[in-house]
Length: 509
Image (tube, rainbow, N blue to C red):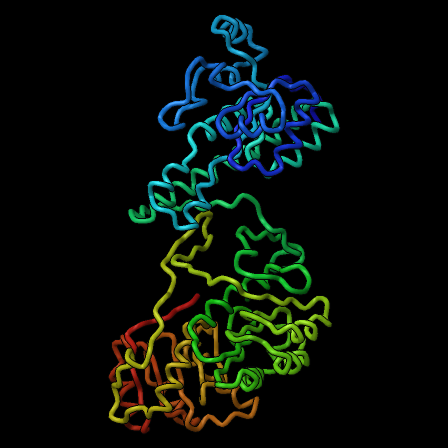
């Protein structure tokens, strides 16, 4: 550890948010630190009965252009940037009457908050901090001589060090604050760029999160895991252990899946795929049907519904071991019951996830794509066979197609009565996916006669049609687009199976 210490004798304070600022100001005053400030921060400090010098007195220049230019002056930046151990810098500071500034405390204009609140563009532009961000960068650059506190997030650390060391800071302390400063400045600039780029949509990848949420581990215990995002914006965590990396993957898959269903629906997610899913006017029945789809895989899964969980539903769910339960709301008695298992994670959704793009890291870089936002309705299903699907079959085809859209490719989904009967996911051939789906459905006692089949991509050969017909499958939905579509259509006509094309492929690798 580097022990070079420097004592704070002067401080420049400019903070948008004044929360928790008082103890810092009082401690600096107690340590006889000379305080410089401007605007509302100066008024705040004066209100505490503490002496403060206006920056205008340092610069001999007023605040101009409605406050846009206050601290942007050589006497301010000279006092921050000049190198105390360089003789020429010291001489120039003396020549131009530049005073030392040993501590710079800034809390920037709330640009992101202003954008998120839906303010008009003029208000948003005025929340682009120029002087503040410049002060932060200057102080961080000269961290060998200056302490920089770049946001209210560092107030507690500053207070602790002021109290512990009577205003003295080691080089390691100053470098730590400088690191935080460049984290703040780079994040701030990223937010501004993304705002300006929202319409131009230049092919630039910039994402920034101030800090991350530590996870129990990554996909496996020997791997470190961190989540960069704001989990608490989307969920209230009502109970349970720490969220894991794998939990997050399944939670993400679950909320994207459930978004495509309007009727009361329950889904069981395992390894990012639905292993059970059903829609029903009665949520309790939807749960029972979803669980029946694959009660073996449901063990240790992630459960999600788009309706409130009451105590009757909770009593049934309570019989299963699962990792996470997600719902828009819970009745009080349901929460009391479900909290009996202290490790069970209960998440109450409080905001929809409005994602337009998706990202994935690969080959040392990142690929971006538009999120698959297309969800077919009955109007998108074009019959291509002599036999047309019945009204009931069409409803089931729409249901099954929603599930296959969110299943790993190659994927086949079998459904009947708005219940998932079996699926084959992540297979290297479509035939294997179908055989796996059939085998699963039969293993849990489902009769496939009259069921429907959804495929995430076209059939290159008629073999899947022939296999499904033998099992009693009555109707098929697929995107079409194969050079041999005609062969699959002819096979359907021969075997009295109806087929519809959607024109939309839903690969999900």
